[in-house]
Length: 169
Length: 109
Image 1 (cartoon, helix red, strand yellow):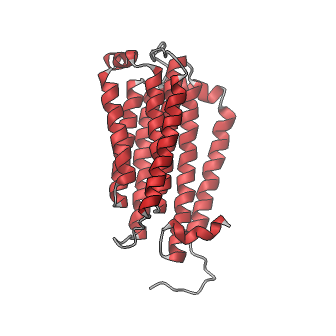
Image 2 (cartoon, one colour):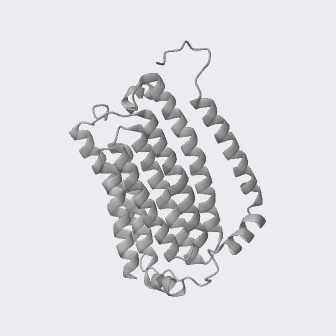
Image 3 (spheres, chains in turn brown, red):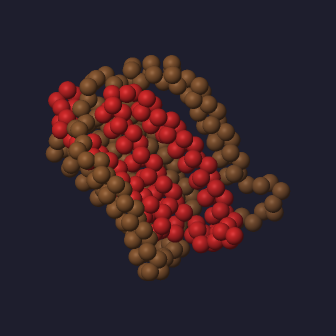
């Protein structure tokens, strides 16, 4: 039980560091740590498939994509934009108001039952595969079309227009 | 693995909701606070992940596997979104030499 609270503290701590780090590379590294704590949350709930997918897809693919893009973009120290102080205060205040609203609406729920894993097989690949390929077969196929169109769109957006005059070095 | 899952037995559902709400709010704060487009993008990822965690907690609580399948779809969606979004950011950087979102403030009108 105390494992959950320790990991929850770590996730909140690292996610605060993500938005407060000055250097975007540090921000990405803290985000990797945050996602690692999320993986531990999934393991604690015995959602093994999601833990592996979170580890491979988020930490392995998406964040490496972020890092590559950041390396391509070649940011300098002086190019890091800074917002005025009042805007920062207003942003933190707005986010805090959202948090207070969510938490106070949680109060009206009353007592909450503990999360008990009734069926230990729930998050295993075997069980999830059966659900995924029976009830959710059509969304699964549609998501493959989505990924294909995203790939084509990304390649189309990121390649240079050949008709433009060359301005590169 | 059996002893590991025993540790979760006593955590109330409200604490999962609390954790997800706090991390979601931190993501919203990050979107409002930063002007670097990539960091804003990362805050959006943080919000998506807090929702994923909450969906998984509800799925375990109800004993229903559909919630974990939704998380799988959200992850596929996030991968597509990141690919297209980072391509757009690279294109913006190529045209304006900056990823400050205030360069694009004419999009407001």
